[in-house]
Image (cartoon, rainbow, N blue to C red; front, side):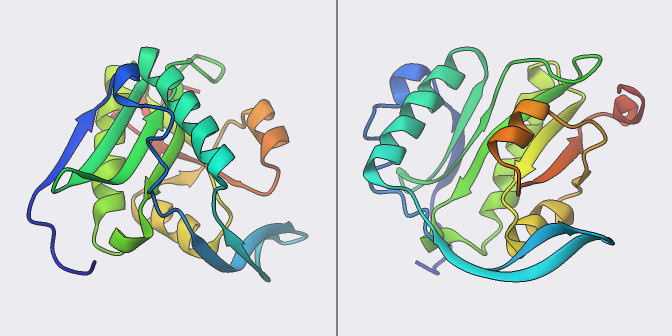
Length: 189
């Protein structure tokens, strides 16, 4: 699907918009070759090839989690010609020493639509939703794949100045990043 989308929209979903089978046809698959790992001199790029994808059970668990997030936070669906091409989720829980962070729990683009700027559009919409939720910055626990981290950095994300310990325990290899949402974000920690 490399054609330009004829009809693209991003809309905020309610819990009722996210049935348990919502992600069944979504193509998450990512072929990872290089990842970042912590090394003695900081972040190092290492070869660790694997395929990242969701099982049917993981898809349904994620749909349930997204419906939960949509109740108080924000779940955004990027649709092309009425079909799901990407989504993002921002949790409403205030995080950080002064509560200025909201966590970007998911940002996914269907693999058939990657490389066309849709991830950037979703991140821009996520930033707006984060501001609506009272955030000064989005906290992002990014997959450590080199191309995923490069995407976030190209969109203005920087290493997180505050680390969310439960997220670190859950995903110890992820790269912890943040995206400032306000000019005052530099001072909110």
